[in-house]
Image (cartoon, rainbow, N blue to C red; front, side):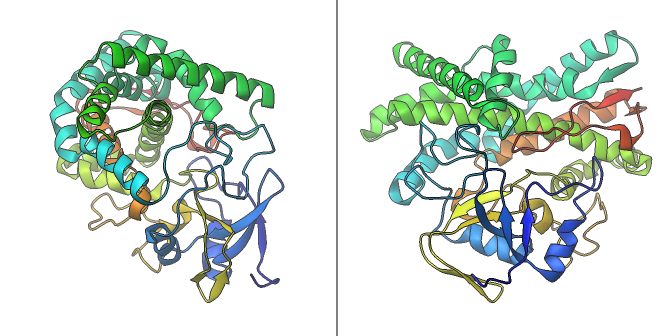
Length: 406
């Protein structure tokens, strides 16, 4: 890489609780291929333009770093959770036929059609959570009352895990995404507990299968004769719980805050509920903090982007939230257009490693928005936007609380 490529330190400082870092635009315009300095002290390459990010994510040669790759680490040695560094104890296949087999086995349980069949149950759950929230008064933390418990109930039902353990799940999920919130010893202890719990869950499903995804994966593996190993099943369950809980809970809170930050947006959806689907897609696109470090890829060979050749052995960080506001691809990229269509955002990635749970996430967000608009049309933020507080110390971005009233 040329020596004069600018360097920036991640995570970039945000412009406000719901605003993108001002550096996003500067990087897209002036240095779309930059050097990223990480909390670990390692460096990687940072991409911020839509076309560059999509090209790399869609390239079948490259994947997330594995334990065997000498990839740039996000967190200091030993401090980060398994999602931040490459030396995770439990790994899923990231390349070739093994990865395709894993996606093929798991993907059928997260199709749009299957999520549609789960929708009535999701509506019932959200209704019950709204009932409980409104019984407590006329103000609440929407994230604690709805954003956190709802996706936990859904993913626990899918995995066949007891939702009553949600406090432990929350702690373990945070440890999985840790950068510098906890010590090396705390993170290691949480990961050991998490792995032990999921190992026992997989063993229980082997002994007494149910109708949950883990049981069905075990049964299908037996039928095919070349299914997932127990370590792969454990890693799959851990990954699904983290992705299905932490990221969606954060997104529910951010969606509500973004739509309520400008009352005209909420009023428009009340008047035109048919826009709920496109509104959810626009919230996903304009989310200012999809993750502090973006999507990480390890280059196994040279890759040319933006006139720069990145050498094999490099680690590349694709800032999805920056790419989603690229004026070269989206008209009025910084505007929140609730009717925007088409909306080819990169929130769920692209290519062979795009998010398997995107239909689940979309369905959950749509259901939450539908119920809130119908049940609480007078919903509003209980504090000014600038008084919202963001999550620190994790790879994911979100709001600590979303105070609302109605």
